[in-house]
Image (cartoon, rainbow, N blue to C red; front, side, top):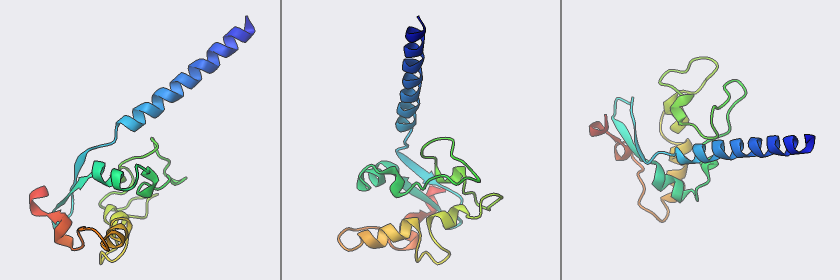
Length: 133
């Protein structure tokens, strides 16, 4: 009887873990508008970027930090990075994507790397559009 209860408990824990994992995977967005920049919002096609990254979420989503643990395996950047950084965060949303001069950063580094053989946005106005506010 004890063995049956133990097996049942293990199966339930595994099923719960699987349900959580499937739910997290199913929540990936399609196209989102990243708002808050005075130059205009950025229309971001998450599906296309994920496909380009080989569906490796960690290409863009870094591991959570101990000072602000993630609530899900991958969260939207603005879950932690806001327009103004407030403790314990030190990086604003803008700086999470690119530096002040847009010369390096998560988005710019990848765009520069891909520019060799593909048409990718390289200028501020290629991504930031007033109509996406």
